[in-house]
Length: 275
Image 1 (spheres, rainbow, N blue to C red):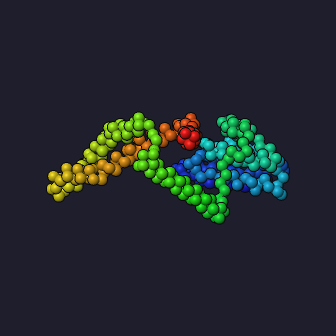
Image 2: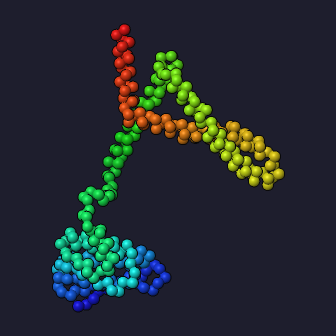
Image 3: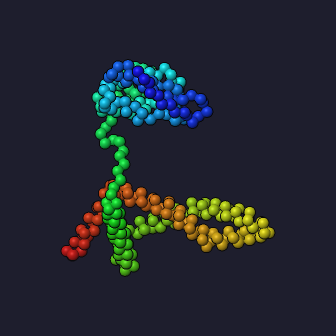
């Protein structure tokens, strides 16, 4: 039988090659010879090299392997064999693993022990252009509606606060002032001090070239007082206190406390009307 061989040289310094060749011991059997080094660092043959020998007019019903020439292998060999195994399973071709190394046989048995769950593999599907534009437009409209609704509720609440119609517990109000003020002072002071030190060091390195290092104090004082101080305080407040408020609101949503507050407001309005 004539033997078909394809060899691929690896990218590594070794002179060994990953080789794959085929022959037919019988009409319904395909013997695959694997030789050389089958590692991820080498350029390996593709499984597409095998399929032409399995498609009609070929009448292959069984595949065997001869791997005595393999000098090294890793997960790339497993992936190569798994692809062939999947193709054989779909086309009712018997795949015999007797000629494979012992470790390879164990890994393939482990990989094929449980069938792949349908729908578990991630599939990439490109949606049509009009569908993407429509989804983007609907998302933009929904986001805009939610933003306007939030702004409206915030304005109404602020107007009620200014007119004295807002109802809230004074103890909670003072607690929030403490959390946003005194409790946040240590971390804001620490961050601002570190930023000031960095700014002083950078400014001193540059100003010393011109003999103007005396202005480092003015640079740090003006920059931190006018710009960096306010920016750092805002960032720390958003990251620390804002995150704490968001976590508290999320806990209240899970415990249905917000739903209770929303249902309590109409009850209070009805009581006022009745009186």
